[in-house]
Amino acid sequence: MNIPAKSPASSAQAEEAGTSMYAKLRLAMKDPFFWSNWIVVVAFILVVVVFGAIKPHSFLTMYNLNNVLVASSIPAIIAVGQTFAVTTAGIDLSVSSTMTLGAVAFGLAFTNGWPVWASCIAGTLAGLGCGLLNGIIIAKRKISDFIVTLGMLSVAAGLALVLSNGRPRQIVSTQLSTLAIGGVGQIPYLMMIALVITVAAHFFLFNTRFGTHILATGGDPDAARSMGVNIDLVKIVVYSVSGTLAGFAAMLTISRIGAAEPAANTSILLNSVAAVVLGGVSLFGGRGTIFGPFVATLLLQALTNGLTVVGVAAYYQYVSIGLVVILSAALVRTK
Amino acid sequence: MSSHSEFAIEVADIKKSFGSVEALRGVSMFAKPGEVTAIVGDNGAGKSTLIKCISGVYTADEGEIRIDGKTVHFTTPEESRSFGIETVYQTLGLIEDLTIWQNLFLNREKLKSFGPFSVLNKSAMRNEAAQMLKNLDVYIPSIKSRVRGLSGGQRQAVAICRAAGWGSRVVIMDEPTAALGVRETAKVEDLIQRMKAQGLAILLISHNFDQVLRLADQIFVMRQGNVMAGMRAKETSGDELVALITGASAGRK
Figure 1 (cartoon, rainbow over the protein chains, first blue to last red):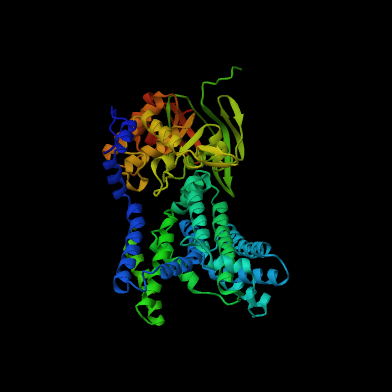
Figure 2: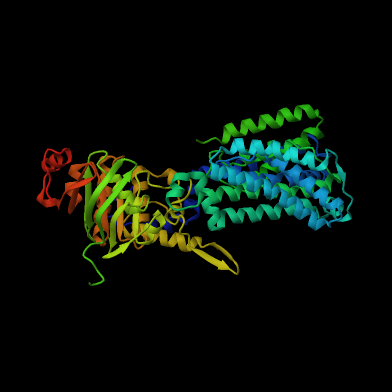
């Protein structure tokens, strides 16, 4: 399969042959993306089947599965932002404290009499600010994303403590409590929000010009630059997206716990990186999938939930989640 | 003056210094449409600097660049590209994890709009990508395959098709076959012949004299930031090129 000098077979004919179902499937199976995308789906089904077989009357209930969906929605939104950062061969270590800062900003606004929607904008803007700063420093000063976002992790966590005086604020709002416990049929509102964000992010990454430039920047920044792609802008945008989503997700956390807490939820960071790796996004950049990390988030939450249901002590759950992450990274590593 | 010059691109007395180092000391050369113009010279002779001035990576300190007889100025590769000057870099500039068609259209994506939103017109890009490969008789199983899975020769072919497929006038190729085997080199040389037949002006940098003598119509020899000689390929020989490059022969203009 090469370039015959004066070949009568044109690539147009090859295209035609490529559209038969069998050839399509063969092409897909050769693509490393295909496998990394589907392994996580298989693993998710496996986890549900295994726990369902062990404890069918407690794990496989509507109530419990609903719990899994609610618990997955916030990590799923954070994972979308993390996916954008990782797709450009970066990482956003500041997501959990950005979310905390977003929550404190929401709390400040709300307790000063702002309506829920305006408080939500305040929280989201606080997240955007963190992300924008991350992106600008990484792109313009050419400092490692690892260092910049690690620094932001501390800055945002500290600011959250400063602004709140270290005290949680109670948030009483019927709108928010409806958001947290309500739903349409069996789908909780929180999960629907996560789904909308996931679908929109997928569309952005794979159907817009800028999305292609994100993938190109992650794949080979030098080549992308030589073709005129504005890789600085790409970096700024991906970290801004990650920060914005973290700030927005803060409102959903507040709706669940009924308070704006200045304490960082560190498991959010591990969960988001874990979901991205499990979901088949290459840590070396250039290979993104949005639905992979989404399913991986469901998988991780189902695993945590399942372990609780079968009675494994919470301490062991941390061990098992960590092991799953390392194992999956070893498995999906193709290069 | 008629609007068309006999040269696709003409470089007149270009100078470029980096600090105290004079990389180009007044270089003049030209490339005609439908011809391969080779630039040869030892390492450090200024070939790459000259190429980078033409492709917009550097801006010359002095001198003029004329395209179809008109003087042009550009300071970025994008501006140079807008005048129909395309470069096939030694590193090719392909993104391995993107498909062939995505690479062909990188930063020139075709869009369709839905109200205020613009989304990628994938089918149009795929069709046109297939046509771009077909125009140069390049056969690759599917334009939907990712570059990662392609051989060195296939990658070179994709990069060349990208450079040739944009209404380009001048295609600059920097050591296009340096990393290729004998068979793949032959195929790339065929591609260059086909681009030539389509009327493109090709600027070829190569260290391989046999290749230069085989492909080129016009040869410029550079040494220490100067053009030592410009001559028709059929009026010279490998021995003369070596003598000019090493400085054993004083050169002819």
